[in-house]
Length: 328
Image 1 (tube, one colour):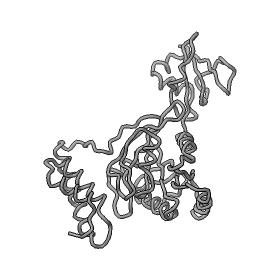
Image 2: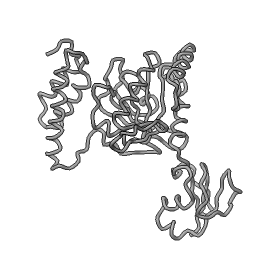
Image 3: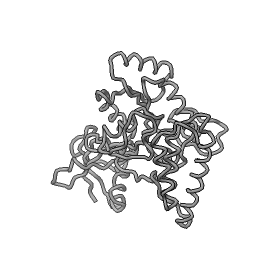
Image 4: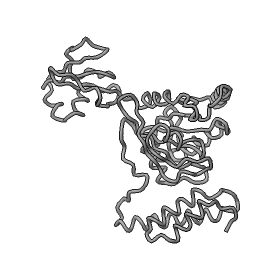
């Protein structure tokens, strides 16, 4: 066995030997694969771990009678959008999620602390976004379940370390995503792609902009990579730009908040309906209840783009903050 295996690996190996079910063995193997050092001395061991992971995944699925098995990555979407925080190890993904939400992912100064995804809810005014901390993605290996989860997420946040070659981290992450057929909006799609690509909204966040001089480093990074994606530098230590980051989530989600009211009563401004931008009154009525769409005669709107109480028809394009009173 290769030398210099970390304590986390040995603990996971012990749990593997003691495990009694395929699911427990699979969880231990995935943790071993995540924490094992990557060098020539561990090449054979890592290959063997990947084979055993595949074997126990097959066993776990057969035990379920061939049905799709729920895994750690079977995370039900909540809030206005599901946001996957991805990137290399030790850049601050877990710290970002724990700082902005009530989630408690493992946080430490050594690589590969995160072995499974951890969701948490971050508040923006009167709505929430689901932030999900994820294990590191590397060119050597990415869990297929993690790849599928990234494809399902609404928004991707690529987290980088401004003090540790952020340009290479960014380029490597983009390369990995492209290998998974995942492309940021606006990026070119290869002509020879044989399967359907996944187009994603992406925000780039460079962590550790802790000191004034780090802003110059950020400017140099942006110039070198010719950044075409929404990008900002943040400091999890000082809290710099964290509110701006949440605002960018709202912008990227491309949703609006609409409130309803009963004639003669005040609207509840604490629980808006969340609908895509450019949605019409008819779209809103359908979301509220299918019968509303059929029976609706007209509606009155209170908002910035209309006179208070103005009557509108089904094709009216809803605006963020509109209050609507539907008449059937």
